[in-house]
Length: 178
Image (cartoon, rainbow, N blue to C red; front, side, top):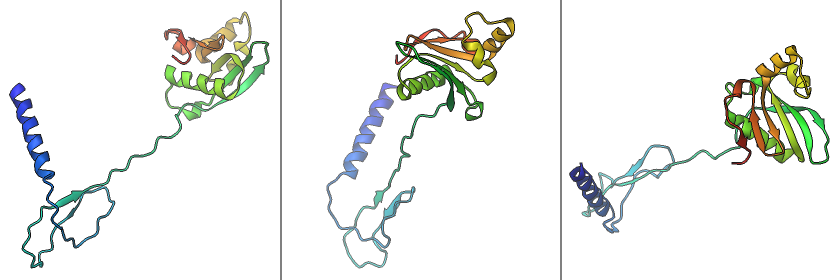
């Protein structure tokens, strides 16, 4: 194993030193370099009467896609109550904007809400409008509790603590931003 590694390193160094020989011989080309995804090779023309021999020159261009905005579910604030230390909001996720949902998606939504709509002290995230009123009830009825068990996903407490519920009840409490 070590012998293979050493042999690979030696071969790699030999190839790199050969490619970087410093020979500044001119290379004639019959085609102009392009920026297609495939490598472009420029060789000396076959009809040339020049006696110098030039090594083939290979170039390629790599283009990376730019990073965009983070992708997370779309949402709307369906209720907002002002408070001294910050507001309480109920946030409804748009089910059509996501295929599956993770705790990271929910955390990203909470970060977005806190940054865009300050001051937020408490936020409740649901994914069905039928649970919107039940979220703010201090002692829900049996029917309201069933709605909460199905559609109430996470709440933000004191502006930083994420407490998961419903389908995410097994996810441990998380500090926003950690």
